[in-house]
Image 1 (cartoon, protein in one colour):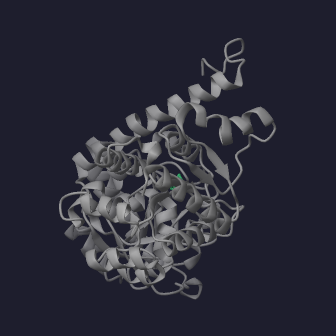
Image 2: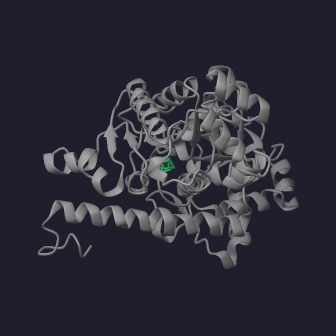
Length: 430
Ligand code: SF4
């Protein structure tokens, strides 16, 4: 706030470099602490199997979606859903039980640690209501459409907000605090179960079938899958069987056909033997497209395919929620340490093909400030200044050894990334 106050920041270079430093504080500080502390409280994710898309709703169950970013409440809701009182109440209203499903990054947190199925990503949040089979959507904060209560008013769905910071007009509000967590979660689930008889059968349409997916690829889980050391990955990169590693992250954006940017880019990269690691809504997009299963290796180039088959892992690894982009930083740091080079020298890149949120700006900035070339699919609102545009897409290389590029066509973006990775391999003599 101080740096952009009247009479302080008058140099665009000065302000932007400060912005990059602040982003580093997020990536290697705040965000990383968020991930670490979540792992301490709820457990470090391990590889697991689950399912994704709107087909995870069950017609004969009370369906409750968990949406937002905070694992604290949702973890408690998962525990309460097994409470015998809730089970008995569900049977009383004619349901077989309670079916919890995830959306966005609260969903990712639960998927990573508990294998809770995912209904979808950012642009699925209203669609899950239009199935007519959702009794309640429990929200915490971030990425929640303020229009949800209006959409829900066309159906029987109740929108339940739980964060003091993120009250939404038209939603039911429950003041959720760690001290009253169990009882609050129980009251919310009771409301959801009691809403089951209000379902309008003619409005129920659950489309498609769930798609299988694998998740839980924390850095620790990747290391374990590799046999306890990163050496096999290093060897594969050195031998060219894996050409490089790309982090595809970020949101859905209404300016981009839903999931098209994520899925097209991931398919192009794996085809060229580039391992993709993903978080947030990008990872959910890949899940819906079937890329998070070992079988998807048939779409990969011969080198990556062989590694996936040997380790029984997918060519696209789900590393968690958007806060878990810090896991990608840790992975890059491990690779750089093992090779004895800086992160900026690695054959790696970042991409956010459908980004929209403020947090994505910070994530992209800490990738670049950490030395990772990053390609955005949507142009940020910076083109009013040629100086700013040129600095972020070029001049900043002189300071952090990396820059942003913007390319809306994911096939062209893949070419940019492949050429960048090939350049880095050449510099390393690989
Ligand atoms: S990836 Fe973007 S849209 Fe999706 S949950 Fe994270 S910030 Fe929100």
